[in-house]
Image (cartoon, rainbow, N blue to C red; front, side):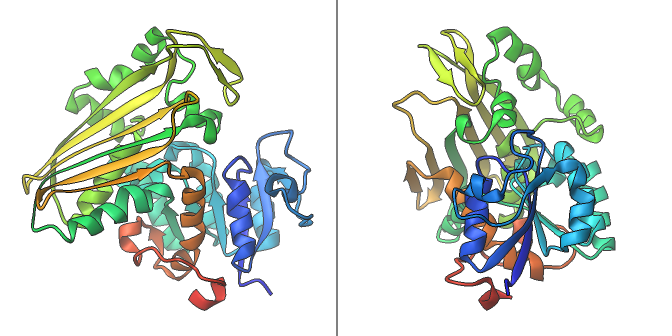
Length: 356
């Protein structure tokens, strides 16, 4: 009998790996939902490219009934990047007593960008005795790997990081969130507004649940908490990455002509009470044939240390972290936690049973 029962919410590109990894650790996918009509009614094996599993993908509108019928230990949400966009699915899971793991980037540390919704979901999770967590690539490569390096440093003056990824790998919602396919004028009007915003205006947006954080906004909050730093000020700047030569985007279903936006560089800078500066950027764009994922960080101080991951398989690394975190989430205290509240990440050798 499988030790862990999972419902997959969102059957796009990442679910292919997540669902396979679950079976390889002696877990079982007992249900799956999506919004894409072309996927609904198909067996999950078509997404996984495996033998038939006898589990049909249902419309997301049936999520509540599916959870009541299958009674999973965990629901994994791999759909959107902003907490507002997954809030209803998270509520449904919580009210059914189902733990939640999501790749939603804002959910990694939502208290510094959407505290209103975070506090609501945190209280709800505690009331229903379940755990909600956001994790994935950032849990290791923007988080624990960096703070572990800090642990071997005597004095730190600055932490600087830069990570790039191909928006083609994550679906249309993420691509559009990075302005891919926009004109320069559209980008300036819809995304780059944050660059011209005062701190008071940003705080007002946060209170109204209307602030759109870059992924590194939440990562900076996570790093500060993990290291015991106290943030004094933060700012975010969104810079368009322009198309030079014609690019085809399968995800957007369009040709990007020269002069169109193919993505975004988002830079977050924070000062702290401890005089340690955090300066980190993420670059999401439609890649040219010559480009590949990168992840580079430097801890400045005594000593100064740099780490560079060349061509990391960001999608697979994200999915593996999600699956390896399942035992931690099942055993964790109730509430909407971040991974600073969990044990250090682990590698599950063979079977979920060995860790529960």
